[in-house]
Image (tube, rainbow, N blue to C red; front, top):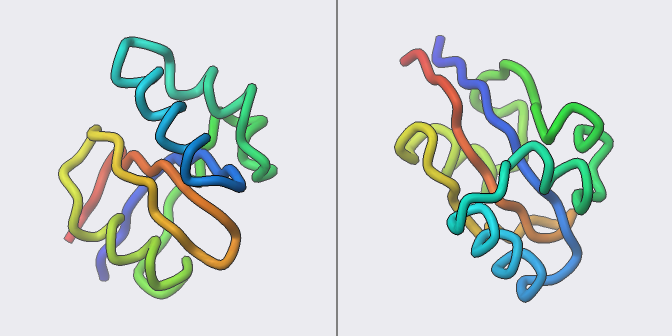
Length: 93
């Protein structure tokens, strides 16, 4: 069964999500940006969600996590929780 590890940043607006993505792309540390801005409890771990399989996260999240290139920040991804930046850190198919 496929497994992935990922980290994310959850915020309430697409504008904020885009601004944070620009900071990361300019060299800011993903984990530090997550700790300072993410509204998800995973922010304490720098946004780390650990390992999970297909269907354990919401559909929009799964679609990105199981198709995006590794170690490239994706997003904004809109879910019922808000706007996410996602980074897939490993995947086993």
